[in-house]
Length: 318
Image (tube, rainbow, N blue to C red):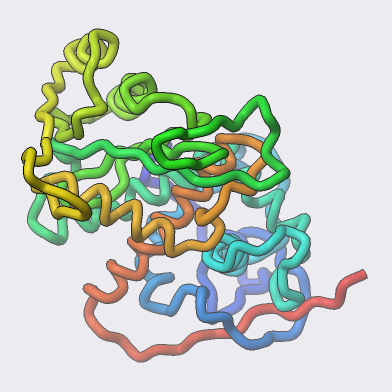
């Protein structure tokens, strides 16, 4: 999807909320309501300034189908962030957010079009360029993390990781050398790391403009299938091993970056345990958690501006 979009000026008769300049406020129709307070997981004005320019243009605005949305994008993003950050049920969405079904439909629509990945990639490129790096990394790190699954996860999409004593799923991630997420895939917990890594790498490298040349891994990422997949894309691997005398927790060169990212992701309570019926929904939750982390980092690095946090619409439930 092109980053550039030419949109005609907003007619004078349209209702525009000065506090928000999202696509829906400018070109859609907003449900009426009364403003209420904010939650700690909400985006600040500084965060919204970073996220606003990276939000993908919705399909209905590009005349690609669908009707105009009726809820503010900033509200919807804050609602999904609240769910991911606090780990609650969809139906437990607080009353000052849009109705939970509308928020879930928004989440599902963004999953269908892969908008959250697109949003994160734009933020990631911006973060790398601000730190003086190329927008696309040439080196990365791979690791995995097993989590227990709740009773909502079916037997056909869960497994037992004997090494970690986890009955559930395993998320495999690829990061750059700063710990920024590049790719994620979710499997059953009994899938060996070396079996999942080829698909993880191929999903990332199949996107245009990739420059990855080197990936640091641990000793679990070995085998002919993995070596063949990496060689197909011209990516070499370097195994970071523990020394024979090391016991317990040890900070290992290069590998600590991806382990730190997994720890950061686990701060989002929705990821502490897998509640998603579908593995791709769990992967989407990982992307959302990464967006929360990166938007806060970008806002902290941006020049300070007067903070004005608007409330959101308080709607009566039918």
